[in-house]
Image (cartoon, one colour):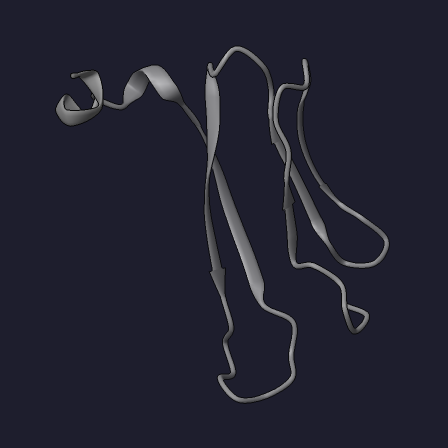
Length: 74
């Protein structure tokens, strides 16, 4: 990954689900529209202190599979 690049770009409100790695090594994630899906993303640096690119893992989940937060519902 080139210096100054971002490890991941999170997009939204597109009508297509996208999980693509760009030529520069940046991973682009877009979960689609209408809040039907979301990405659960983990970014880890396997070698702390070294100037290495982080590892990005992502899982596409259905939002309806998660229980609402009671405090957010108030």
